[in-house]
Length: 320
Image (tube, rainbow, N blue to C red; front, side, top):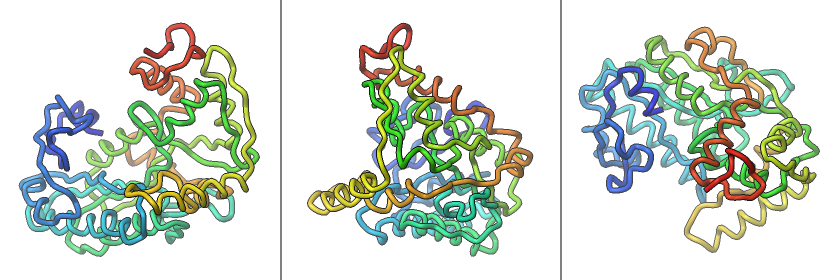
């Protein structure tokens, strides 16, 4: 997103918790401000004099619902308050999550105007973050709800690409659940599109309109390596068991679980579908990358940057 904003001619000021290790912001033409959305006082120098505030910070794994709420709800409230004090006319763009709206219970795309029905603590915390924005009566805002994001630099879905490079692709829950994905570059374009449209107190889903079932995703991943990997069925019961086991194991460590029972519940929903026709029109048609082409671009980037290491890659895609 920072790359897209800089390419669009915006001047960038970014909040970082560890200024000595700013990750992908390193070497970008951006002013770095040390702080944390959970620390209200640290946000004043971030937003002072800003024309727009893009809130993309968030906690995606936590040991408790209170931890999620502290970062995703209270953190949003802190940033909203700082914006209203330091830049009351700024356009506030909240990058929320499809999890705030919840899954499609009737198999039809969920509209952004529908009442949120999250099925996890994470989703509830993101919905409460949205409500902090909507309750701020003087705030000019846009709320964006990305679906599952994949692409260069992304680490959560990377494991599926790594598995494919090692000769195995899991087919979860019989391959039947249906979802929409969004390529990272398309998600960034949606943010730029929202800024160019201006603040109209709107909410949009951010996802490619293509609907995929888990089997189609597995087949696409299996076509990436030079030698086709083995497709391995993983039944729903095993996914749920893994969620309980990993969640229980995390109780004995200091880090939050990467996967737990709630993540399993989200993964096993029948459908995560959302309506994006309004977003395509309003945000300048940002969703341009279907999964077949996006997966290939992601695979090539992982390979070129040494994130995939396997003799199974072959040819120009072989990782370092």
